[in-house]
Length: 182
Image (cartoon, rainbow, N blue to C red; front, side):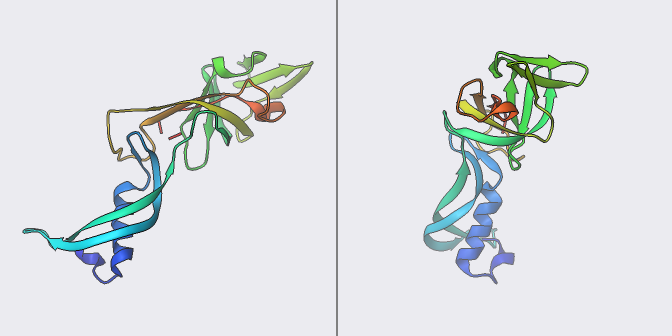
């Protein structure tokens, strides 16, 4: 606990310290840490030479975002490119649907820079800021960093939407989450 936090209740100061270390960071093989859920137990405080901070052993639970394989998620289309569709989950911006995971009847319209799903003579466009659903098919962690300091980078989850049950019209796109979890 940093000395500037000594005026706070001990548990509150520990939550601040744990959130500073883990919140909005990816922990390898765990996922994107959102915030402390609760403190399970606290040990005694120790002072070390040369440090004015209190060092406390704490057992805590975190709220973690980690998409699981088969999970259906909803997001908003950020952009389209010939490679696929980028999707935002608001707190998680790095969702990407590669073109090979879109419906078989999808074509990229170069003039409008947008994907179009053609079905039964109708055209459904995957426009920016439209809602879309996708199913996660793979979650992979980037092992280059155990704890990533710049928010969501380090987890890759892939998904598909060319299957029934994800909604109707343009809301049934396939997706893959890339580089935070996903």
